[in-house]
Image (cartoon, rainbow over all chains, first blue to last red):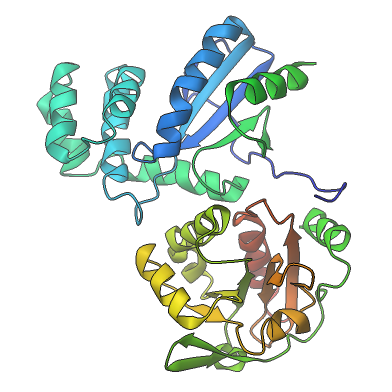
Length: 180
Length: 171
């Protein structure tokens, strides 16, 4: 790798439109672009949880959608149902449920998860039949493309793309160095 | 963008620079069809050289371009992937990944086109992970060589296409 290589930067700043865990004043913000059907994202999810637990208020975590729909036929609807859950303040519950059931993401399953989270049927219909959140998901996706997201998952630490691996130790070390 | 060209220069001094006429070529896009760069004259072309079919990073890179074809279409740009793999290999790879854009086989003589663009790695027998955006007149408008293991994404390409669109008459 050449010395003057600089990874690309996040173009869409974190704002109230985002799904956020952790305090706004945290010294480090970790943004993840991911796809609910992607097995690598599935593997990364528990690691991100561990990182959040370890750092507590020292970290703000943001999730953005990056469904690779040609490869993952269920990823778009999964992202849309999570956005529907967000309107009921249940985004993270749905997010975690989807990752826990990556092998069962047919519409039927998505509707079932929504019912379990007590999301109104009308909201589910708005998401899955009328695609009310397609634009929202696409906005995330495009912001990722313009920021240099190059696969899933892609992480940004304080706005800079993290090109290293996303195992626990590497992420913790990269976050620690960004906090300095 | 300017950052992109700095990176490109330091990563590989030999890659053709913006302002250079893009060397024409004719390569197989399928076992029985071939495509030449001149076929695309009149619209921007994105040439994405990549080391090999099937390797994980390339897979992601081509998969990403596949997902954003509609974005490229907004600029009327044609994307083509190029590697030294043969056309049967490309066909299998494209089918497996459901790719909707051509993969060209720089197969015989091996890497000849990559050489003319200055992005062939003699020692490894593969091409660099290199991007060229070529304007509708056939001149290189932007180029970038990524570290081999790093998928360059599409942000630089889209920025270059946007620049082209905003200065259509620039010679």
